[in-house]
Image 1 (cartoon, one colour):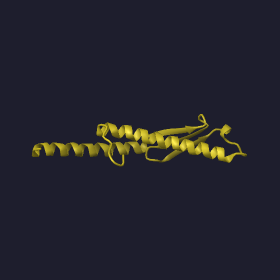
Image 2 (spheres, helix red, strand yellow):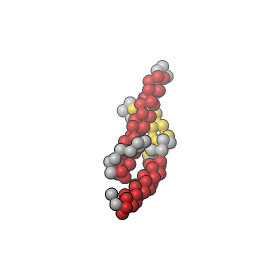
Image 3 (spheres, helix red, strand yellow):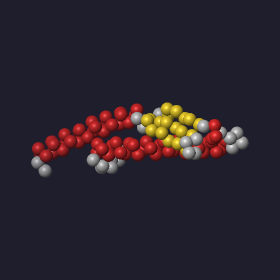
Image 4 (tube, one colour):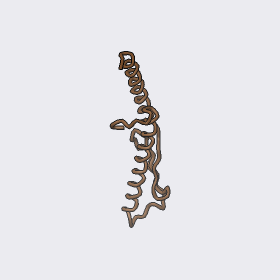
Length: 104
C-alpha cells in the first residue's frame, strides 16, 4: 500500500468518525416509543436514553394487582430500549457501510 493510498484511507476514516459523531448527536434527540398491553402502557424515550413520557391507560390499573402494572411498565420500557437499539444500529450502519464496530 502506497503513501497516497494510506492518506486517502486516513481521510475516509476521519470522515467516518465525524459522521458518526454527528449521527450520535442527532440520535440523542430522536424519540422512539415502546408499548405493552396493546398500548395500555406507552413509554417515549430519546435514543440518548432520556425518558420523555410514560402514559398509562385506566384499564392497565388494577389496585388488587400492582405487579401487573409493574410488568406492563417494564415491558414498555424494554420495548422502547429495543427500538433505540434498532434505530441506532440502522443509523450507524448508514455511516459505517454496515460494518459492525465494537460498542455500537
